[in-house]
Image (cartoon, rainbow, N blue to C red; front, side, top):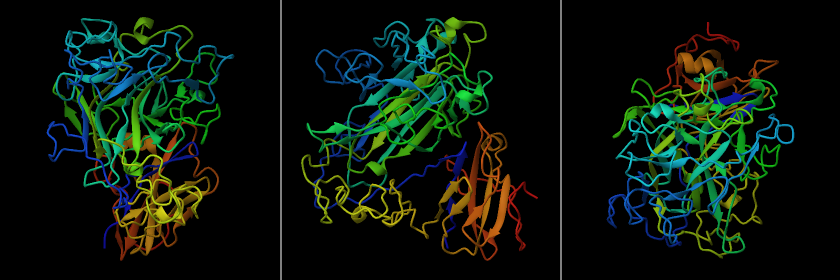
Length: 564
């Protein structure tokens, strides 16, 4: 019998936050598949084909020095050596817009809860001084070289001093992104395909720099994804942007909430306006960078090798400069056979009406450590094709065949969808239980939401209780939980517990389930067979979660509460 592995489930201010790495679906064998992109070795037909790799050291435009531009590589007169473009709030072929998160005052009450009129855009190649064509403010200081591999990395931040990295800071009221060119994913993945990974160091304004509550950040980064609809009128149309949830080295903070300092005429966090109206969109655009969404602000270490900030790690020393880099990983299995774009988007808050950056504000704000920005290196995307796998213009019909070669069968809206999850029944791996992500951890074609013998106990949290799957092979279940801040400080997963439950749910009353404002709770479930308890699974870095206060083996029932 396999041991069940619980998925960790968080409840923050009444909202459910959960993520699992999902496995790939199966494509229709009748669809022809374009060749895979040539891999990092530059030789067609070798084992690394299908890997799209960016280390910001590769010369691609034929001119000296590594360049980044707002227009893609190959555009006449444009110097760009990367697999993408920078995207700011003005200029270029793509433009970001932003709006204040719910709760913050916006114009006309707060006229400066908006993008700075200077339209700063601070993504740039972080290279040794004089080796790449950077403009003023993006020239690496003499002591500031920092890269995971090779001499260069990608950096969001501003260099105010040429001789010292103590002048590194971030400008406020900014939304800026590095966005990839279109990426064509295979509909027939091989082992290791359909995954995104990158190394990062995040060093931005959060509770480690001043008096924010634990776990909150003012300035931060996120990774988001966009899907192309090739059958839309006009030859195709890009959809709305959405968060891409990691499964390794997940977010280290959540976005700052307006109520932390109460209603203020100046403070404001921005969220992009190209995310669509579906979901929580109190100001017309679904919030992706607002509380309680996860973000990165303190991951890795830009100064020394003592710790990996608030990320689990492990940390890796870079080839250039000090510090520790951390690798985050994401599953792309939900986008099987699709054409996508990915962006690394950074946000800095409105501090007051007139301040441009922390460095110039001076005093205790600058220069300081903790506002130096976000470094990205060694982006790796697997299962990438040279051209789209889909057949533009093909019509999907309800015939059990993948007519348009997009990896989905009978996804036409007219086809039956019994569980209303947006996946038509013929191609749904869990047709009677909603599971839009189609996660299938053991790859047996039965979705995790329906699979009771996949070694995974999925948990759901509502305002009145916790429910979990009846994973086969267990007579009873133990429920553990606690405060996420206590977990970060102590590593204790078993702060509260409810033992030997023969059913698959626990009902709470009153305030037992609802975290206090600014707090987040988590829950884990284990199974018990013949008195033997399954493990608590592993954390995002693969390290087993310790069970320091297990349920006692004797019979009986304990109430939810502190371990006894």
